[in-house]
Every structure is written in C-alpha cells, then in structure tokens.
Image (cartoon, rainbow over all chains, first blue to last red; front, side):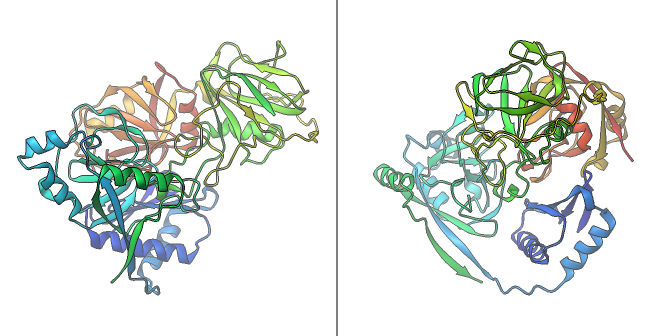
Length: 239
Length: 282
C-alpha cells in the first residue's frame, strides 16, 4: 500500500490498482476503523475501486505524522463484528421504449433481447463506490457477454433512471445527464434523494440485483415512489 | 429580502461547500475564489461559512427590500448603488429600496457579494451552495427572492476603505504540487508542462477549465480514483483539464498536477483566452 500526499492537506492511500472485491473489503474495513477512531481534523473520506482519499483540515495537517497515525490505525485489530450487508432488488423495465439501444446491442452481439435481459438480471452486482454523479453506483459483476463499448458521440440528455452498459460496467443514471453508455432500460427508483437524511439508500459494500418489470408495473412503482411510499425490496446477507 | 430584477450572466449562492458528502458522489462545490469570499465576509463581520452571491462575468440587478450592509470583492464589474458608483472591498450600508447593479467587466471574472448575516437560502447536505441535482436550482433566476436577515442589522462601520492587493486576480502563474500520477510523465512532458504558456479554452465553468494546448500523451487511463478541485488531469487526446469546485468526486484520467488553494482562486478569475503557466512548489 502507498500513502501519497495529494494537494496541501489530503492523503491518497493506494492499494494494488485492480478491481477486486477483497480490496474493496480492505478499504471498507480501514474506512470504518478511521470513522471509529474519530481523528481530529479529518473532514472527508472517500474511496474508489482501489484508493481512499482523506481530506484533513488545512490548519492542522502534517503529512508524515498523519501517515504514521493512519498506518497504526490500518494495522489495529478490527473490533467490529459486522459481516453483513444489504442486497437490494431493483426493478427495471427493459421495454424498447426505455431500452433504446437494446436492438443495436442485440444485433451487434448476435444474441436476442431476451437473452440480454436474462444476462443482465442474473448476476449479483457488488457496489464498489458512489461517484461520477450524486447517487451513481459503480457496480462490479457484469456478464462478459454484455461488455459493450461506449457510444462514439455521447448523448446530450439521458433520462433519469436509465439503466446502461458502458465498457465493462453497468449502472443507473440517478438524474438526467449527458452520457455515452448504451441504454437498455429504466428503473423507477430514486437513486439520489436529498430530502432523505441518507440521500442514497445503498452504500459501498452492499450488493444489488436487477429484475425485469412490465410497463404497467413500471408506472405503478413510479406512482408509489413519487408518493414516497415505495419500499425497495432488500434482504440482509450474512457472511 | 433581496429581489432579483435581472440575473446577469450566471450568479449562484455559494458558501464553503459540501465537504463530507463525497461518498454519495456529491461534489464539494462552494465558492470558486475563496480569498475574495473571505474578504467579502470579513468586511461585513460575517463568519467564514456565511453564504455569498458568486457573480460570473456580468452582474445582476438586485433590489433590497430591507436595510442591510454589503461588501463586494473579487472581479471588478463596476458596481453601482441607485446609479452611483460603488467602491470595491468596502463596507457599504444599504437602505430599504436600494438597487444594486453592475456595469462592465474591468478585471477578473468572478465577483462576490456578501450581505450582513449571509444569504439565508435553504441548506442541503450541510451547505447552501447551489448545484444542479442537489439544490433546487443551479443559479439565481429573474424574480427570485433571496432571503437575508430581515431585522435591522447591527453593525459597526469598521473599515473606512481598505487598500487591498488584488494582484492575484491578474497573476498568470499557478502554483502547483505534483499529483499522484506526475511521476508517470516523461521528462519531455514535464518540461513542457512547466515551460509552456497555456490558454484557457471556451470550455470553462464551475466544473472544470480545459486548456487549449495539448501534450503528446502516452499515459494509460487509470482505474477510477478520487479527484479534488484543482486537480490537473491529462486526457487521452493530450488536453489538460483543471478540475474546479463543482468537479465530480472521482475520475479516470491520470492526475498530473494539483493547484494550491491560492492558484484555484487565481484560476477562478480567468476566462476564455487568458494565459496561465504552472509553477512547481517544493
């Protein structure tokens, strides 16, 4: 592991630069130890696939002494017994009115639209982190058969809730935004809601599975979501 | 209350930002030029956290519907009160009914308007900084009514008029540190980074400033990693992008340089066509 100074008052901790669930778990354990240690001067903790940034208060930052402290905390034994996470079940409507790139994908890959949907709803995806846009989940676990290059020209407007594939990744656009991924469906769920104390229902380390719904079910769920009474299906996974 | 009669080019309420919500993918946001903001707040006796109006390129026309006190700092946009020209970096008493307007942009790119007690717009995730998708609006709009302290403000007129050194606005040097992927650059690329004068392209906003001149680039993209305001990214085409306050929380381009806070303040005052050069700090 490497500790690098990043700017005047931040430290970047780097793991081997690969996408791997065991690295994610190590980062999350370190992060929770840091949160528990309640270190004076830490203003923000944020991680991606294989790195963690720790932003300190400008006033009291000393790189070498902070690194010393961080290493000590990293090596301390993990007292938490938390070995459970949440599996979220996310409804997606793969109807062609939402999945505007399904036909092109199906043609290019020589597999039917139904097979694409089957392969997309089968895996349990790991949530590695949230980035890019508020509430955008970086998911690991896409079926190799569904890898698809990003569009050459990004679209200026992608609908909120769009479910998409970009390269080796799949994800849901939490809000309307420009984007270059291939759109295969839409989810009626809010992935980012500032009115809630926890604006994202999911967090890094949780997992997620998509299931296919009809247009009618989509509109029913959307009504419930907008009324603030929809409960996302989930289960707690131990171990 | 302050009524927005006209918005100008782009004005938004900003404070020191939303540090601590990045794990939700929420940008830090906050004022582009922290130095000008601190000064604006100090002049009216506010704390550093008070929300100000960040004014970009051309100023709004604002009507005060209560007594207040204000200060204007940063870029010079020829402000006037009821048609009478106003000083920069000065404590100004406002009477109910006063109309504040701005004229021509003389220097810099962003002005800061503080009001005594700070703007009282809605706080979301610990900050009043406007950002699309987090706050209801990304900027102020015509006919908006911005809440400020309604009670008769208590103040001491402390600064009769400060002579400030605002040379950082015109300075073209940007002090930088090495960023995480700096050492992956070739000697030729490093030399070019520190010898060339770079031009701000038309793609400049609160999110990022792209530079015109490109480096020859052979660096591979990195796996998506955290980034900060002030990070200089090297894109596959060789163009450099300097991330600013509304930047995304993570990115996949190599991070080659990191601007100091004062360099971010300086860059916030630059616009299309301005020249900048990077100076490595030890």
